[in-house]
Each structure stands twice: as structure tokens, then as C-alpha cells.
Image (cartoon, rainbow over all chains, first blue to last red; front, side, top):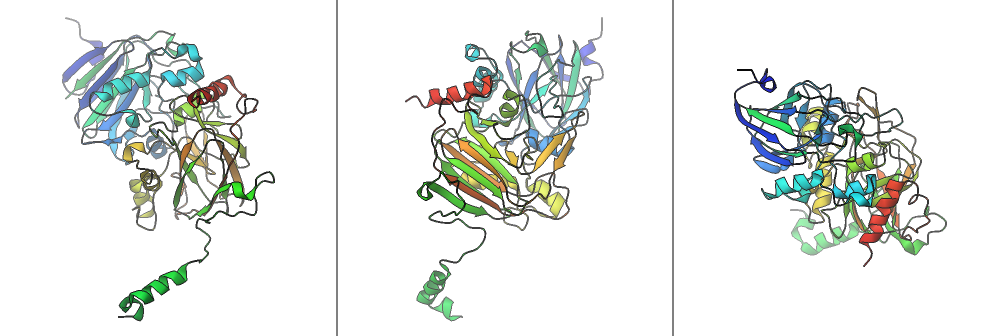
Length: 211
Length: 274
């Protein structure tokens, strides 16, 4: 029997293990103390990620509070993901990717028309996934705020130039997140097909919750 | 009991005697400003207010209106949220603003984009160029750690609660307080992602002029930048003026500056095709 390499070093015992297909949303509650592991199965797949406090979903992940508190734009091992009220929601306890993005936001049908042209309006997008997942629990458009893009690389150059560039992930690379409070995690496994960072090819990811 | 407390008419007279008092930080109603651009008629002035250090203000502005912010003493920080006035679920999207324009540093010609692929406001003039799209604003927890106190009703109010109050005046709530931009206080980003705050204080009188490209709700908080390194809670008054202006014409240079921006304007024009 061969050991599952995606479970190596995982803290706790898996209680939920799911492959999220290419382009799909995912919604799951992670209790305080549990660890969520995201595995980039085929490499350079952006995992758009939002967090809501389970007790009060008007409290949610804030990219601006998070980067201000750590004085750095990139999310790395040890980064504490803060809410809009300044409370720790999750901590990145381990990652085999050097850093992750939280300034690039999520693609939407509407932003795609600006970035790539009006012919892309009908394509599936991350905001559609976030809405679909959140609507199941009564959250709507007002609840779509800044997000994390795990495995995505968005450097800012000296003149402020900024863009999603070549991914720095690879098949089997992962990130571990420990919940610091009971959280609802909404994920869009990014369906973007106009960006070279994922070779124009969305791929599945694996979500493992361990307790 | 004093005479004022004992006698309601004396209290009335006392209250009325305060009318007409002038202080630095207040709205001027009806608006008056002696320094409008030459082509702006006095009757087109819409809003004249000086926001206190630690204060906030909010206003609904029609498409075409110009909004001028002046950092009167060189130490203001305008944390700005924007909503589509007729459909406030549409709001400023800071991530799209930087991503779509391929650049994070705001300056004249840059657009403030909504989450619906439209331009809410554009930056017409800017002699500051120290602005920040990344850091957001302070909250009660931050100010409590930094200044020993951060309550909205206390001596060191925080930006988030000020933005929340401004949003609440339009019937909006906690879910509507979205990522903001900071005008006048800047950040530079190093290659490794390190954020270097550019806080000043700067020369007095620097200004930014924005143009409303849609009917917008503007909410402005004037609190110290969240990464202000100074120990003291440091902030100075912010002057706001707005005047009527023409809707952006098709030959406008900002509208046509980039293909992404042009499509954002086209999406606005499509929205107003009614």
C-alpha cells in the first residue's frame, strides 16, 4: 500500500477530503483548530479563497488589514489572515510555494470585459463561483470582498506595474491553513482561460480538512 | 440650576445665539469657495466642507461632478469608498482597479473601477502622487494597540468605524464597508513585497481632483494612515469641494488612454443608455 503524498506532514486526521473539479466552487466550514490543506494537483492553478466568520459572516477576510499588519503584500508561511475587524481568522502554517497573492482579486465576467474584451463576457468566472457558493447560505454580492489567490504570483514592480505573471507552483505543491476561529471558507477554483499563468488551462485541486 | 436650564426659552436663545459660528472644520451651506477653477460658475458649486482631523463626510454626486480634495496642512489622509448611488451593491473594487490598469500607483489619468466592469470616478488632476491602494484603513483593534484607545466615540477614532458611519447614512451597513483607497498618504512596494509607508507630513495645499463617471456615493474618512509610524495620533483637516461638470465626452483623453479603460467607459455608457 503506497502512502498518499498529499497527506504527508498533515496535522491531525482527515475528516473531509474532496477533489474540487476545474472551474468549480467549494464551500466548507472549518472549525477552530482544524487544518485545511489545499493541494495544487496539476500545478499553477489559482485557488481564489474567501473566509467568513461562522458566528457572524459580516466579519470576513480583509486583504488590506492582513497586508497592513504584516507590512508585506505576499502571504507566506506564518502569515496570519485577519478579518475586517482585525481578528485572526486563519494562519498559514505551512506552504511548499514561496508566497501567495492577495492583491489581484477575483476574475468576474465584468472585469474580464475590461481585461480581455467583451467577447469574454459569457465565460465562467470566480465571482460567479463565489456568488453561487455564498447564495446557498444567504450571502450575496455585498459579501464579495477582497480575496486570496493561492498559488498565484502577482509581484509589484518599482514603478507600480503589476500583473499576474508566471505561476510559481507545481503539481503536488500545497498550503496548510489552521483555523483560528470557526470559519466558512468559500473557494473558486479559478476558471480563467485567458491568462498564461495557468497555461490557459484550469485544473482540479484537492481540499483536505484535518482535525 | 442655571437660568439656561431652568427656562426653555433661555435655552432656545442660547442655542440660537450659536448659529452662524464659523470654525475651520465644518460644511459651508450654501457652499461658497473663492478658489474655484476659472471656468466654474459659483452657482455650480455643490459641496464645500472641511473634514476635521479624525472626521468623515459623505455625499451623493451626479455623473460629471468634479470632486476636489485639498490637504490643507499637509497631514491629511483621505480614505475613500465609492458606491454606485442607485445600486450600492456596485462599489469600488480596489483589486480590479490595480489589476485592470496593470499598475498600483494612483496618479492623474487613473480610473477607480467598480466590481461591475465600470469606472466610478477618474483622477483628473493630482499634484500629490503619494496614494495607497493596498493598506486600507485602521480599525478599533489597530488604534487600541497603537494609541491606547480606538473607540469611535473616543479621542482616537479609527478609519473603519468612520467609513461605517458614512455608509450607514445611506442605509448601508457592515457588509458594505469594502476595501478603500488612501489619498495623500502613500506606499511603495519593494521587490519582496515589503510595504514602505510614505506618510509625510507633506507641503500644505496638495490637491486631487476626481470626476464622477457615474452617479456615486462618496464616503471619506480622515484618520491617520494605518501604517503611520508616528507614536502620536497625527492627522490634519481635509478640505472637500465639488462642482457640477459635463459628462465625459467621447473624445476625452482619459477615456481613450487605454483599451481597458475605454471599455470601462463604454460599459458606463451602456449602463446609462436608458
